[in-house]
Length: 469
Ligand SMILES: [Zn+2]
Ligand SMILES: [Zn+2]
Image (tube, rainbow, N blue to C red; front, top):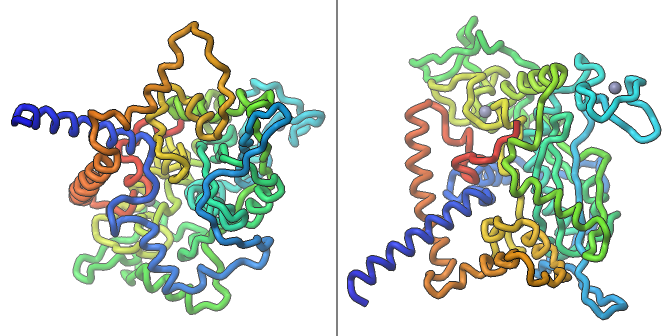
């Protein structure tokens, strides 16, 4: 190989790496790549020290526990026609109610006693805005991703195999997030529902029931003492560690927040032969391929007001241990410093467009296959089918040039390209490097700690197509 060839090869590898980078960004790689920056690390450190957070609640059903086998697919069945089926499940997980919202029901009126039409601008807005629990709605939205993670952990332990899924998080009309998943393999519906009932996520943060300081009169920074103090008395606010210690020392302490799924868990089997399989798959692919901005539209004044009230709450909801909003609740956030600006944290959940859904919106489990979403972006439909193991693809008669997608999937095996693992490793190392630089720059520029955006930024650096509003 002469030097020209070599240069050309380097170019090829570089563009391959770029492609992988983009795929990683597009997919929203789970967790943080950069060591030491992930919230999970912080949490792990805390759970060993803070015993309380590992105690299981008594008010939720117990789950069966099995050793998780390494298999990732469910059973297959051979039908009477001799064709092998691998049925899949379709699951929708929803959050709790925060108060009745105007809605259309079958056979009964809305709780406001009227019958709404499906285009009523009131739909999805609270019947009684003053009593709608915006605080819980905001906290639930912020912690929804953790609840979903818990769900998959619990489900895998309960069924004993490494369940694989693909799905998406999207806002409901009432602006609360919910999640749709396709699960590869069958799991009894009762199990999916039981696990939803038994799954919860406790947030062991200092209590933040009510704002102690308004945004326009927040605590102030005492540069000499290097601490945040009460604007009137000058007394230092408790540090993050002091606040957590107080929780540990209090035998009656309750978590700052408890998030659980709502009663409405929809689970059903999807078989390639079933009539609604197309509709089901269409539901997922709609959000996989569409820009997320399309998934929710605010068109009427009541809806705008509803959104404003939710956002008002999200602005002051702590998004992480390092969120500057903690100051408004009289606690110094973790690693506090003088450049914090309460009410102006850069965390994505505080932005009006995210509705509190700050992280990844497309969720794909790690091990279901080596193929990426981007591989199948050209035909998300085929991708979901492949994920579900639906093999009864109608033999496309030689009409349109549609089956080209099959070739797209094989790209990684192209002999022109180095092994996928090599490209990925390089891409990841570059990404860690860049992440470090970005964090440093961001910290300098805004005075916000990088941790404020940890879970989000690591998975989705550009935020492209990831908002919803
Ligand atoms: Zn109504
Ligand atoms: Zn924040």
